[in-house]
Length: 383
Image (tube, rainbow, N blue to C red; front, top):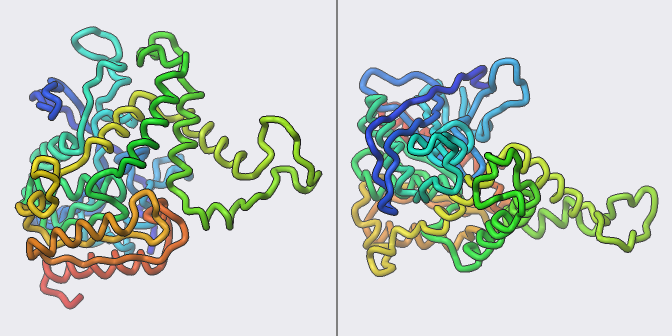
């Protein structure tokens, strides 16, 4: 297995208005995207990768002269990897509202000549899927071999199967959920409040003041990061180790960083506040909260998934308490009730929600076997 090598992002501009679920519309927008591999003659080997909260279109490979710029799912996508770019044409799209190139709060609002800021309209998972479908139309892709994603990306993949049932043959949903629990919505709101109450937020128009609500972003990331890790993983990595245990086993008796876990979370928060946009964080976490395809069907997920036609791979992780295996099983049961073909894998991995991004042999083996089957079905080769 090798790296896909150096990659270059592309931009696609859309002048036609995009009507959003909120009733608002974007009349002019750009989507950033990357592609890997070669689209075959009948355009049947395309795979769409949907990204999670703080990721982007940069799924795999590296940028020129940036050796540490590997894509966020580089262990999954590339030559000889589970999603093999020697076989498939893989597309990564940066969602609207992001801070990684697609039109978002940081960009200029044509109506005012100033950055959108808090005036950027709220988005839903379904809005992102509609925009992705428009990009697929421009690329001449009528049907994907698979639409795939983890966490928030899994929600998008599931939405694809509902909204455009004939435009994908397979749907791969990893470490995801059919809707957020009250606890998850609560965590998201605490994170948002940290940003909204930061004095440097300025009602979302902090760009004009040339400041960044770093403290709010930092706390938001710390809250979020806690939910991505399992208790066992935290215990193994940090336990109750003191930060300066080599120098002293005494507590400092102040509000600084006594423990290694405190130091780690503050480091993650500081790093995040340097590159992520506060308004983007608010938008994306609210889209997470709103996601609930069963809502229009009286809470009946089976009815919500009745329009689907794809085959499915649903995967969960035993220690993922944010989007627990029970939530994945809800999807599986609803699909089985609709007599869909479903492969389900519940993987015993210690890393919590973040396991979908990591190198676990069993997890990678499940995805590889499933995608090998997609290839075999499309080519007539033995899997």
